[in-house]
Length: 143
Image 1 (cartoon, rainbow, N blue to C red):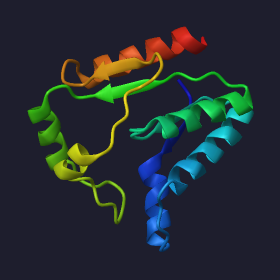
Image 2: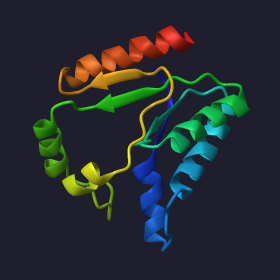
Image 3: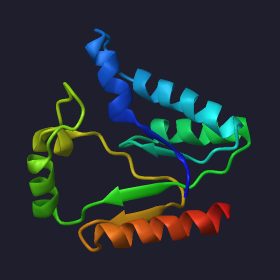
């Protein structure tokens, strides 16, 4: 499936490197890039945490403004020990990027989703199984 891939970390890190305090700016840039690609008829994949309703609403508004459909997917790890191990063993793959610590992850504000979405639990499925489910779900929703 050909798609434009937008990764929040890859947008925010250059902003930090340039001396900016990022805040919501990374998501604003990503939504703008998504809108431009959606206007071209491209599928856009946004790789981001989206822990609060406002960030998820931003993606829905971007889709609405451009007349695009939206498929919302939440990826979780239901086993805390496995989740912690993954967080603590994660290595940065972007120059200068500081990956979150376990304390960062557990102290993050999380607001429950307020609409239907696909939930994928990486503690229960292999990466290949998760990817197969994502592709099938997206094809079902957007054709």
